Length: 192
Image (cartoon, rainbow, N blue to C red; front, side, top):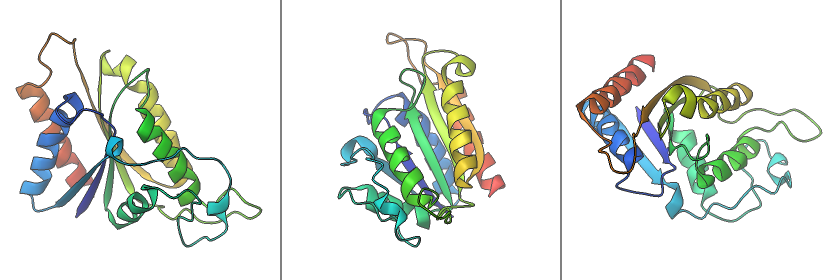
């Protein structure tokens, strides 16, 4: 199984990365292929809603020349797509949002004169997120938005792992969070 992680954190040693590490370790130890792309390292321009991507129903077809095409290709190869992001102002980070806007147009050929296919229909999706509030008040809008995004795109939403950080002067990662991440990986393997 191929797992592709879209990492929306700007910090490679931050909380979201710390939570993703045992998740990926669990998947790799079970023999699965895991690849992660750091979105802050990529050139991802915002969507212009030009609809150039709607002309050819077989390809991403975006007129913007940046790293989104490579990400698109990797997504199509994956069995599971994981959106990993810290929550900033109750939603994902800016590079993740920019990519999601591009993908919803480029992957879903719904926005021209005729209704076309969703190129990624049926793809499994999960979320790993960190936030400063209790997850039910800090990650709820993100999860609701991602569920709606999945429904619109014909994606299979499998669930979310959300963990809270109690503040800048506290340690985030602990044995409980590590166990939650490993258990979430097990859930994903069982769901696929």
